[in-house]
Image (cartoon, rainbow, N blue to C red; front, side, top):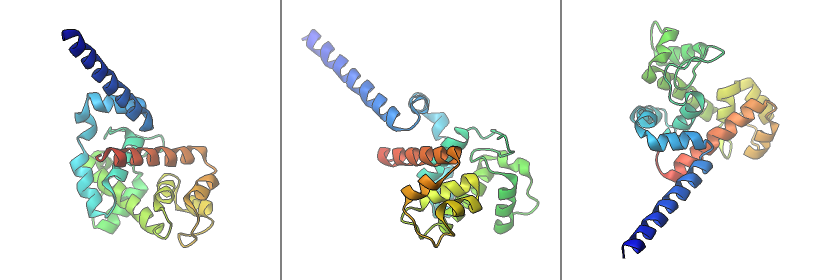
Length: 200
C-alpha cells in the first residue's frame, strides 16, 4: 500500500513538472515563467496598479502587463539605451505628450522611475496607438509596432494610416525591423499566455 501511494505521488509530481514545463515553454520565456512560479510576489506586485490604470484607459490589463514584461521584466529602475525609463520603458518625449494631454504640470523625466507615473504614461501611449489602429481586425500588432518603432514606421508597414485595413499577418511580414517584429511577436505570445492562464 505504501509503495502504491509513493508511486502515485511520484506520478503526480511528474505530471505537475511536465505541466509546468509545458506552460513555461508556451509562455515565450521559460526562464521568466519558472521564476514567476517560484517567486510570484516580484512578478505580481504591480498587478493591481496595472489593472486600475488599464481600465482607466480602456485597454486590456493583460496586454499592459505583457508590455511591462517585455520592456523591463518588472524593474521600475530600468534605464534603456535610448533614455527610456521604468516599467514600460517610456521615453521622455512620449511622457511629455502624456503630461500635456493629462494636465500634469511641471513634469520631470525622473518621475518615470515611479511605477504609477510610468504606467500612466506608457498605458496612455499604448491606448492611443490602439485607438489609432481601431479599424484593424486585430489592432494589437499595429499598436505594439507603433509603441516600439513609432507611428510613421507603423504606417509605412501598414501601407497607410489606420484607415488602410490589412490582415495582421501581412502587416507583421511587412515589418522590416527584425527587432520590432520580434518585439511584436513576443508580446503577443505573452498576452496570449496570460489570457490562456486566465490571469495576469
